[in-house]
Image (cartoon, rainbow, N blue to C red; front, side):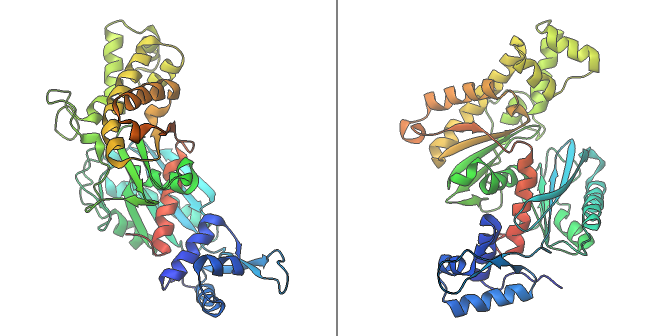
Length: 395
């Protein structure tokens, strides 16, 4: 049976209600949509014929004739892909975005977009075959790069050399024969938080994504805000100083050049060479290199130099957040990503800067918290991205 998708806004709203809240009775759904019973029945019949909705059994009795429960059809399956600079995560979810199966493996994005897209298609094909599916309902892809969402391709991505304007969306769609949506990872993680994380309780929040690349997902009025050309939230290349370290984008003094994984590791290596950290020195001697995970573990283990590196990065992040908080006035700031590992140190410093330098009206009741989803935010948000497209809400 071919899955067509919703034909009108009412059908799209119905599918999103079932996605977000699970099975609900016909009576509850008709009331929530504000539709007359006859109109509601006709919309459900069309969605059922398309293979998008099915009956899940009888609803609890409310007196009189018992209503039936409706749910997203069992054949609806989404592919969720999170591409990192060092790792690839691929998952299969049901229509309510529960992860059914998942594959994860190391990834070097420098092998180029053709090889990475080929591997994405292989892994999704494997998950699809194991589930006995002929096709997927849709696929969402998160990239660590600025993305022109309408075109489905990265634009001048510093972290993805050779990917500029590569048609990621169209290449995957052609291989899998289903709709595909691509966005940058900070936006996708914000969607994950909005659907299944701390952000679910808020209509306005900032999701600060830390790691090799730094970005910010903005949820305003209950919806992801991308801006006119999908460039909103690209804070990693905001210039903090004119004479700072060289950034991968070619400019000096960017936030990412101070606070990204590579920048923190660079400062950690300098500290070892200066004899300032026996702990980091021992890790370097054992492995031959240092990673962000090494710095985070040393910081949480009490190493004073590693803690100071984290505090330095957190202070600069806090300086940027002061402007973002004053401008957008969010209900909460959620922080996720690699640098979020030494959480108590990071949060204490960021909160200190934000609360001290922002106006009381913006921060009087503003929580700054770590993501509860952690690394799962990427896959969770990619599933939301796919379902928004399939259910008629993609931009």
